[in-house]
Length: 249
Ligand SMILES: [Zn+2]
Image (cartoon, rainbow, N blue to C red; front, top):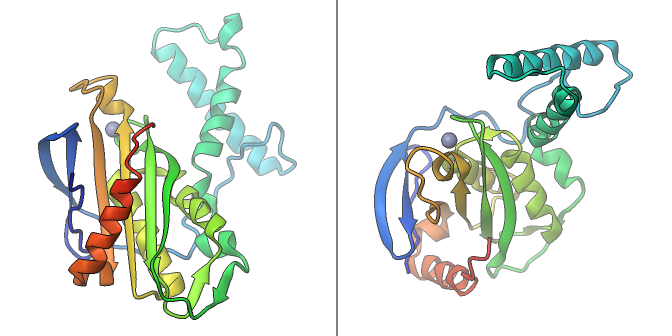
């Protein structure tokens, strides 16, 4: 099975959904023009802490909790009943955690984990768990991310690759942009000969509502440098990813 779809940064990303062997949709999506991915995106006051020391954060947290209470009322619930009375605080803390990628940048996350190294064969980390939330419905999408790069004098500690995924997945996202941001960040950090990122995800907004395709996952990819330009390198990568294709999400 070929899951590859070429994606170029300056053009709309292509993506497709598939259900087992039969693909049923193809579409495209436009990116916003990008800033450097190494920079943090937002400063914010809302926190995950139960009771932050900073009074401004306390006020921001209280405001968000009040909005969540209003949402419960609007949905027809009674936010004062026992089961719900701490829900605004729980949801505020949970949402803060799930979106804390906004407060992080890749440079800080990597710290000192970039090393000079003459190794120049493909490095591949498969099956990195990925949890994010779609920006259209604020519902989760989750799955796996496969990351490969061909070093050009610099390598990154392998344990850091999942943390790069977290920086971009813990935001409101679309899968295509998430995939591209991970690839671009590695490209900016390591200036490698090539970077390849493939994500496969299940979207609860599709599964729980709308088309209700329970078993369909969405694949997105971003291939840069040698992975885009050299068909043998690309094929080697795709074979290695396919070998990992156990699909036990
Ligand atoms: Zn959605």
